[in-house]
Length: 246
Image (cartoon, rainbow, N blue to C red):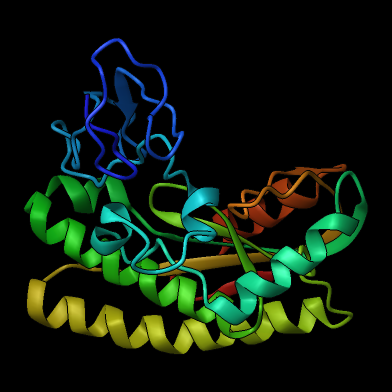
């Protein structure tokens, strides 16, 4: 059985990779349509969406330096700037179980399922890869962290694990930057591929509890109250190309 994270050949009955320690699962769930796919596939055989394999989850992708393995060479999302990764490692000792005031940013593509259904799978993957690259670069520029990928968007945090007193301003700066860059990209997609590609964002500040950060920068966050849910609600209310802020 090939490890989806590092490509190492393992025994068929193995549960974990003998090279990198990643879990070996029999199936992978497509983040786009939810279909079950055989382990080792790169793309969903139901909708063509790039699959999230064991060992390359959103949080793990966020903390994996570029060029560290086969998965990172394929996926433009699998990278964190080294200067930001170093700050995350320095901060992790103080963050286990700590309550933090953070700002949450959600962004997603409006009507992504309909667009994916009407688009060639390889073309849609290319469009979304570029989209995720723009999102990650915009968040990292202001030292935010991509907490997870939502299939057709992201959830990002500002203020944890890298602490900033101005985390709300940084989130707004990131949103304004992303608005400009994504508008240009949407125009390009409409012109070259004939797709009505539009993105919306939602932002909210509040308290969360930060979980443990491992050596691979894997982070888990648990919202206290409705901090994350309200940010996602603002995103769902936002008009195409807009960012709604609480």
